[in-house]
Every structure is written in structure tokens, then in C-alpha cells.
Image (cartoon, rainbow, N blue to C red; front, top):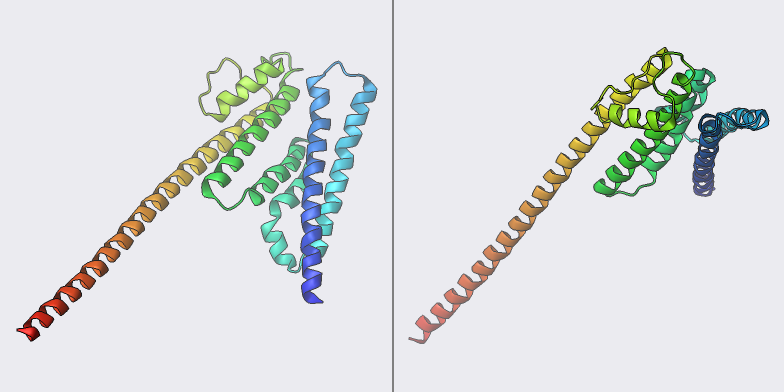
Length: 245
């Protein structure tokens, strides 16, 4: 019974994670439409706002359900603090985009065991999601400001890419407090992703060198065993010849 209950909990946990990812995607669409289409009708804006808050409520229920199904509540808090932050903190408007970390968290848990595969999918997903979300957020914050110079989505995505890569040409820059907070977050993310890629590449190179050394050691051991067998055969032949003589 215990094994059956645990397997059932694992199955429901996987289904709930998939539901959370789908809800995060719906939230992203509802958040993006009013920003990318500023001339959208009021009914569309109302529908998007409603969808944003409905997805938040459903995500809160999903996290609560996973917490109830968890065998070890303390371990759940420790391993899924990012999911909890994605539900609790977005009640504050500037932090609502944290709900989308569920997508990165989902990618991190479902990209296999290969180091290069995990790093490639995780970094690629993180960069794509971060770029899209940050460009939307900074455009929403800057477009209506009288001194703002980020007026179109093209301006915002260009600014995001130059900031995320730590190049920073300076042709576009945020002037609002919210926009500058997004810039700081992007700088941190850019440096962190660069560190992840560098560390992962170094780890991969070390693993490759270790594999080559292990293969070389194995070949050396095979050669030594072969030489030992050859010496043993030669010794036996020599002893047999001496006996015949």
C-alpha cells in the first residue's frame, strides 16, 4: 500500500508540474498581449487582467496540492522554494513575473542527465524566457514616461540583449525606478549565466580529460597483462627446452 501510494503521489506530482507549466504559459500570453498591443480594446485588457489573476490563484492551488502530497514537508520547502516564491511574491505588482520561474524550474528537472544537454537547454531556456519577459516589463515601465527612450518592443529587446550580455551600448536605457530594477536583475542574470556556462564547460573538459586518462590507464593495464602473459609463455618454453636438453 505504501509503495502504491508513493507511486500515485509521484504521478500526481508530475501532472501538477505540467499543469503549473501550462498555467505559466497562459499567464505569459495574458501579460504580453496588452503590452505588445497597446491599442487593444478594453474588453481584451480586462480579459487579460482576469486571466493573470486566475492563473495566479490556480498556481497557488497547485503548489498547495503538491505540498499536501509531499511526504516530507520540510524537504518540499527546501527543494521548491522557487515555486513558493513564484506564488507568494507576485501579489506585489513588480514581482509578478516571478511566476515564470516555474518554466525554468520545469526545464531544469526535465532535460535529462547529460551535462551538455542540461546546460544547453537550461541556459537557452533561461536566456529566451528572461529576454522576452524583461523586454515586456521594461517596455511597460518605460513607454509612458515622458523622458523614456524605450518606446517600441524593438527598442526594449535590443536593450535587453545588450544589458544581458553586459555590453551596454547606452543608446537605450531605463529612466524609471522599475526599469532600473529590471536592469540590475538582468545584469545579475547575465553574469550568472556566463558563470554557469564557463563552469559547466570547465567541468566538461575535466571529465573529458579524466575519461581519456582512464582509457589510457586501461590500455596500459592491458599491455602490461599481455606482456606478463608473453613473459610467462616464453619462460615456460625456455624451461621446457632446458628440460629436453
